[in-house]
Image (cartoon, rainbow, N blue to C red):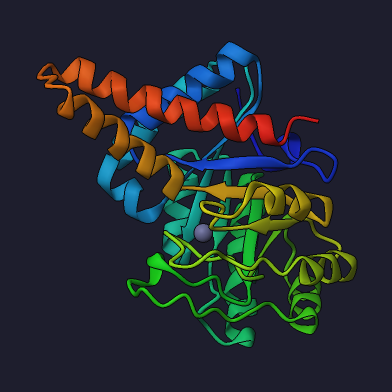
Length: 271
Ligand SMILES: [Zn+2]
């Protein structure tokens, strides 16, 4: 069944949220959840919503997840406008994130409030971001980030009704060029200062020990996108390198490679 983030994630139950960027990834995630009877968080950015197509989500993904005996969340990742939030809700996403983090705080607050209203009306969970997580999404290689300040996080969560808060604590989207330094103390300070659970974007490439420690300090949702893209590419490459020419077997290789990542990551948060 489709459900929202608040039913799947809690402070004592941190979870990975996996970005859907391929059909193979979608199938691997559904298969994993159903095989293990474990609720899974699937999410999609505007970019891949456009790539895979709204109809793919409306007619295939939403009904497939909604009729499953296992709970699934379908979360819209980084909606950059109120129109995008509305579109996601119309398609049937069961949770949305609005990202106004590149805007000045006041503007981010005003827009996030409107987005939160839309999510509330649709009865789905809502995530917003303060401070800015940089990286590949900005189209530049620069991993400069605006770290989330405790004061901003307090003002932001006081002004915007939300279920989850994405913060910038040394994390970045895409591939890290040098090992990331996750600011575990900042996570703990933020978690102590705001009444909403925290989200870590850019989970790919963060050392597993840091990921686990981040969850101990207050992160409840860890986003994983790049890792699945890399697994998809590696699966296809190895299949082609072995001389495979049948698309079904090439896709199966991509799917296996993604399943391996899911298995590794899920084992990390099992406690
Ligand atoms: Zn993100």
